[in-house]
Image (tube, rainbow, N blue to C red; front, top):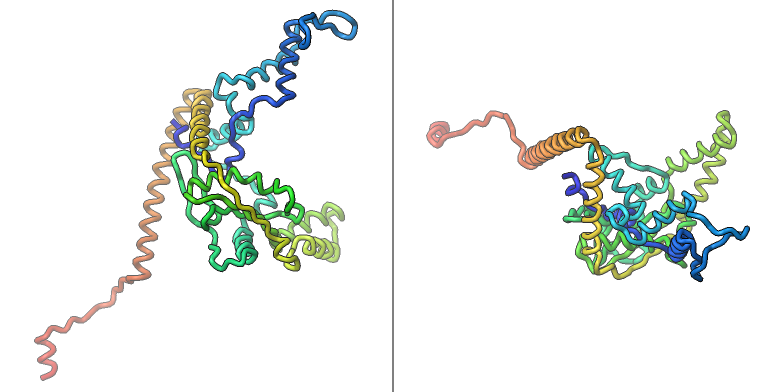
Length: 346
């Protein structure tokens, strides 16, 4: 079924995790509701009484629902309870996207800047490390049985380059902004067979068209639609000053961290993917049977069409390469035979 097509993308690794169980406060909330349901005090085997001195009755409906949810999370009995809430949301969206063979890509200012300035971030990291052999961005994508991904740099370690949207994201003390990506880099580490992970966070200039778009939005919000050109230029100058960093020392623009990756990442990913595939099967079966049949037929058709499109594209690229290196000409060629050559000389 469709679950066999699911693999964890390394960049989305942090969104998919198993249920973390109960926190300390959640555990004792569950215990309190359990004792109250039995009519006893958690600390002594006597009936619980309220402020008016009357004995407590059965749990209210909201408390009973809270207790049931906490008990399910404490001792999960089905695959849905074994996955975190974020993982369930991610998998539900994956099933919907796969059935329709479409995807709604999320875009924002930080993600747009990060994508466009990735090569510049690698260039600044090379300058900061003073290593002329530090490579350019990796273009290879590795697809494994349970995960897939494309690291930014493969140079002894698996490097991931992150572009800070503003100077406020450059954290040199707590490392929280970098630590959040260690799980993602550990996934790259075993896919690319490297000896550890590294993360570089770089403060790059904001592209000029993004500054102009941001300035236009700000001046329109503050001055209304009838703003003047001078007012727009004033906002552009202010944003340019606050979002370009060429005058800063390189030590304040680049923050790198190396670390040893999780040695059990491959096995943990395998178990997690098997759990996710089990949930995907359950989720898909919740759709009506006629929708399931239509979706499977449509997916098969799209896969076949994609395959032949790839084959055709490969053939066209091969033909273009052949024409470039071994061009075929349609000019007429005159062959001179040996006898003809001797008669012409005579």
